[in-house]
Image 1 (cartoon, one colour):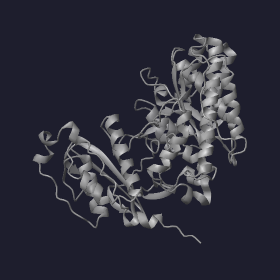
Image 2 (cartoon, one colour):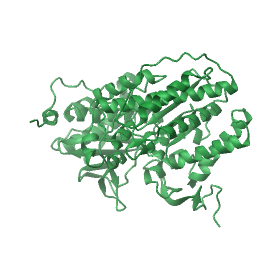
Image 3 (cartoon, helix red, strand yellow):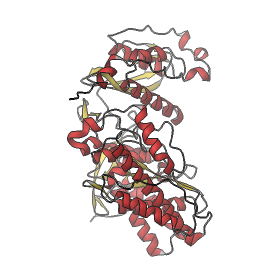
Image 4 (tube, rainbow, N blue to C red):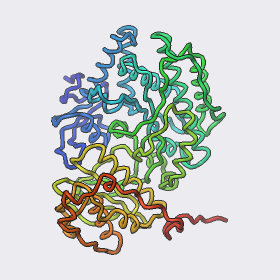
Length: 506
């Protein structure tokens, strides 16, 4: 007999078949038993492992029911949910959103971390309906999200963080170019719909719990029409509903935030309105080989994937931000990662270039480090570094730096410029390198990584190891020296960039 209580013995939860696999949040962590819907991929399994503290088995039903029931009970206690029927409907709505991979609260809620900032994220591609967008379902999800955030804030918070993820994937699914006027018009309408529905929900809560602010809603005129049927009308209706509210419960509601493991669990591939990094990603086969696989956005875009998901320069993101900024209650994160936590390929051994990608796993001064690269027709296109033991802040800085290098490579900055900037930089961890036969000492993680890139991608260039003294604790430099700035972009693009800029016209 199937039990529906969220235990790891379950085979079905809410009518959805489950599968069991083994996954780890970190490539160097021990795999854990994970139970999740059968149609969800291994990326979601890794994200689920990251959301569940501890080392034992984890099951989506048990983990999700813990915070769903906690929110429902607290909502009743705070009189945000009027009665048992309202609490049951609220819980059912959250389950449905999660199982459809449409929305969920941030990682802090899953871990029951009261110190974490509460957030609620909506995965935009999950609201695609054929060639259209489920505006009504999206507005309903926003109302549930605002209610959940009000409960998480103990009915005292005046600033909520509700936002969306993977705008790039949504536009790809609609076959719209991220840099086109049509794409920005759809994005603006999505932002207007989000703002209007969120403030209308805030108004509903103000009517029952008391208003804190008068209705003084100021926003630009939303697009009168878009390529998506009904979207502009839905946005205007949401704004009209917000304008008719008796008052507002919150000063801010619509705010984007850096992604965490929840975006990966939902299947979002980019945070907020960030452009896509590429139409493919590296994944590991069961034998440990690395192969290129289409992203979810590429599968949605079909034959147009290469065009719609080609790497974008910083100007594309800036133009999108300018279009959306008037609708946001707070500025978007300046350096949000281009992608939510990504699958961590686990090859059989550290190895040089393998097909169109490579993975190196080494130890530097006792700290495990993984370097991944991806190559295209023009050469090196993408790099990423994973550090197993260091703090989240340091890992976030390294991740943002690698993303900046990836963007720079796509814009034509020569790899040699980055090698000159980062080789021999000094900060911990540093010391002996284990796992790389050509590099034996490194003065920092970046020193090893960029000297390795020089070996693999600059004609086998060998840069000598630093001395033991240069890798010592007293030679690691000051805090201001530990995180060097990226080199200035050259005024004249590299030849590869000039070739990419050519277009056939006639």
